[in-house]
Image (cartoon, rainbow, N blue to C red; front, side):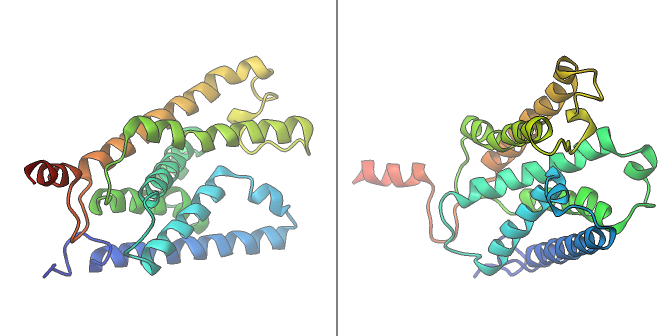
Length: 229
């Protein structure tokens, strides 16, 4: 019998961690929406932030893991890994490029920012380390597939800024801040490089840490049995 404290989707510490992520994330986003409504800000701008989008994706993934601990589709491990990479990188980019040193290192920060930029990224990283995937990830394929969303986000932001309502979500994406399009090469390139490295690390950890679920066998073991037969 599996111990209730073993590191699986049904383990007590894992359930507690994921429930904390879900509650903290829902509370933070409700707080954000109340603030947006109270200040008369545009909802389209709020939802246009990568931080918000990655945190909403976390809520979907964590809720799915809590409600369906078994029998998830084969692609779910990759979605979980991508989500982990996005939210961890959200926290790192915020701390390095967007937050002041007092915000990044101190605790005098509004709850939604604390939860979405610091607490949830850390908890999701811990979850990725604690609970192995049920299938081995292909690192190269993960890098190529998981980078599609950040690249699409960059392109969408520039299209909206240049051809839409003119709104740019972050200073490092704004040509006006960097003296034109050419000035975006360095800051945007740094962010993209950080995403490639971060995604690769998350995928490598997932590849190393994977374990078959109870009742399943590793592909190599199945092949050996077929050959033996």
